[in-house]
Image: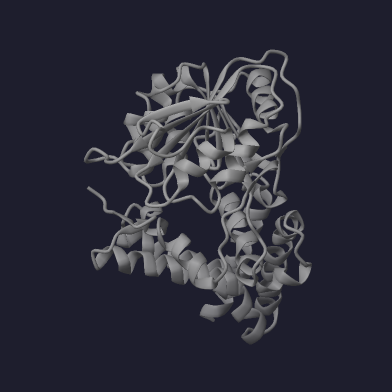
Length: 384
């Protein structure tokens, strides 16, 4: 009786998600290559901490942008313990070693700023971003991560979208690394769940309160950033991209799409690596609330487990309801699987993948309650 009622409720939820949740499952829009009518100056800010494995190709790709306007790459080395800064300088032909300037150096379109501390109340990344923003004057800012490589046409495409629609923020979900078994199994679902949580169509609708961005690439008008009080206004945020988008959207339009012109080269070789990536901010997303965690567990059980359970164990119309709900959920995953070149056979496994994400979320809560907090690049973060 209970399983039958849950099956019909699960079907109703899936019909809502499929038909009325902004078409999140379609996995679009995608930013297309374009050339802007005008080419204003751009400061490209790259916060980096212990990124020696990725920084050289990242800087190479940024310096090679085919953009008609002036742009400068500002790398902010956030107290790295490796060769991040020297490798970045090498990519631009800047001298490294005893004769190089430790505080800041620039040549070939690159400036390097080295930090050795951060003020209390700031996340390390946002302090680095703030220093990079302060080091430039361009009207447009491209905030991008130190593991993102960019097609030569990328900056022009971002500016074209911004100028055509007079947007305050243009952001993209870059193509994530999807090479190892763990990545092939779990990364497309990460993108799918992000789309479900923040439907891109709703983010892009000025009438909707849904706001989000993907930190890999965020093109921001400096004026819009200053209007909200600068990076300082979100200085303690751990989910900084979504927080920034929410602040900016209160005053002006934003865009969030997918990118075929930028890709993350950060590897997640094992399941434990992806677990740590999820657990780092999952409980933060729930505002450290046990009540929201309980609702999340109940909601995910209804959406992912009830359709499977009712398909296997219910009878009559309830089994049909569960089967239809399961079919809708699996079908909704297909466009994202296609985006990542994965077989449609992964679609029926989505409930199992969702269980992995749920377990990592519970692990995130346990870490918080045990006083571990979030960790990234050998730095611990705790809510103040």
